[in-house]
Length: 125
Image (cartoon, rainbow, N blue to C red):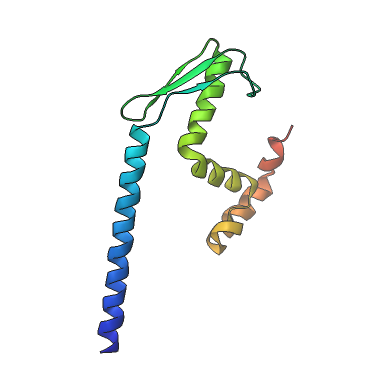
């Protein structure tokens, strides 16, 4: 009897988690379709020499309008950070050899290999 109750609880938890994933996915989809026009300007944003407009279409794809290549590159970095900040953070941790601090022992060998290359110090100005 205990196994059936515990199994039923586990199945219920799986269904609840799946429902939450579906609800969160739907919310992200709706919010990404309704992203307002974002305009970056030099006021308060160092690194931009002229106005830069970032407009997302109905599918959430960003379109950048900038006066210079440097401004467009800056805006591309901003858009990438909006869309993939967690992925950028994971890549940064992996490059510094600190991924196992957050992921656990599974990444320890990778961290040791990366720290041995000195890659983290190469990017420091």
